[in-house]
Length: 192
Image (cartoon, rainbow, N blue to C red; front, top):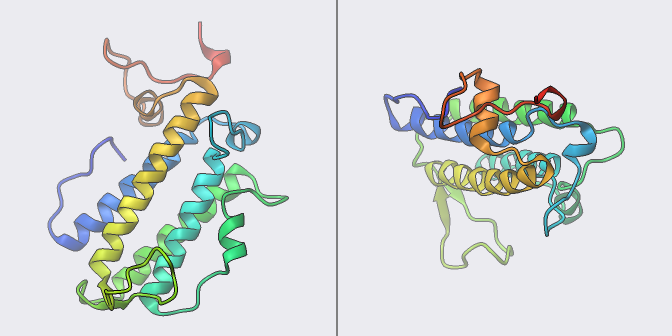
């Protein structure tokens, strides 16, 4: 997937394409990291690249549960979704991230009207009391926002780990040639 979303034909395709692009930005932040680096918290916060990906996976699933009006996870599960459990690796977290993306695509494919009402869960302090329902469209826009927010966090964490920035990582992932503007990231052992 290149650095920009390809032209889109309609609203549904646009929403899903921009959501996929933000997922990709999170994935790019993990490019070339070891498991130890992926769980390192080198910045002022306790956030890690792997933890942000795991959290984004849980958030996406939770929103699809909301859309489909299924019960969602507990507060404890939410609090634990920033930290890898024993046996979890960067690869396993990324694989689950991909599964959640496929689940979302399948869920949205089964919904004819993006304007369909999604009832606002009650008793959640950060949800508005004066709004009865969002639309599926709103949920997809919110997921784009959520993933973009966490992709930004992941960029900062990643740069704190080894100095790699989004576009140098993207250039490495995409196989872009080196230019005067951008040098593709290389593992530290591969640098001259």
